[in-house]
Length: 394
Image (cartoon, rainbow, N blue to C red; front, side, top):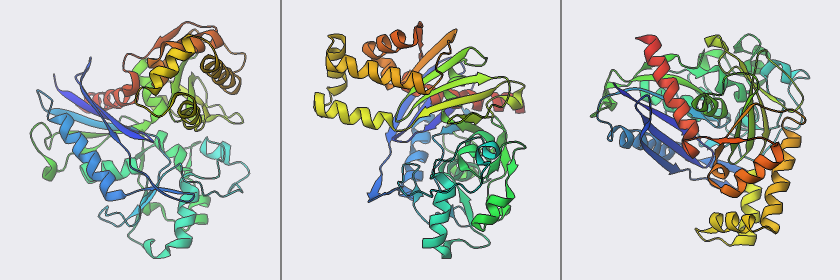
């Protein structure tokens, strides 16, 4: 049996796993280095790419057989422009970038792309880049996100899965094509964008120049997804009445639904529709993890034991426990108020905390399962997509 590499290109770290189809053989986490200049939040493109490549090599080096496939999920919404050879012409603009466009480019944007207007993300990034660096937009330049940037450098072919393309804000999710009025508004041609493909599609094989040890020209590069659908795949969240509760930089509830559902404040994901399965309905509480971190730093110090202290103080009652209950209640009211789930799986940092599990179970009035993959749940989902793509292509 071969093995697979799954990457979760997260906001603060890239997490990776080596997967044999049943269990994790090796895992790693590489911190993302931000460049902050006022409201601007960027990543150095070449450095980020090199770190990602090294992480893949390190994981492959721990395999006992050739790596059959590589896939990735991503906290999509990061933007860059490259030349025709994939050489970056600007830094990667993070979705955390604070510059915004107030007015939505279309009244029915939510219906078109599947996400409500959040005033930023690639649509805004491209607009700002056009104003500040018009010289980088040529007939041969390529506009992408960091996930299709990485996959291109692995296999030499551009492609972007429909799930990740949703927060790109340029896809018409109703028919899974680029939305020409938005391209026209931004002065883009479709040839400058990555072709859109379903998750689990084999995009190509590893470049011969990257072959080394367990990485071979037979290693397939497989289209992944947005990060929360990937984590849901890892946990087997596949039908209505189930929910993935993901706690990271943002807190997210992901629930499969039978039909594409557009509700105010909710995100629609194509999830498994190309495999005869469900759509995904997502409710996000953006950046709550960053706010929690501020609270923890102010009450528990900045030592490496601050999360353990936060957990212990919460179990003992008092301000830490009240903070947890308040946070859990607020999220339930924002996510799926009044709706009960037969199965809830928790993943992310708080899933490792007994106090957080207790608070969430109390607020949601449910027995909480915990992902066995902990913070690597999204990466395992990506590895499973790599496996599925390889098997379907065999």
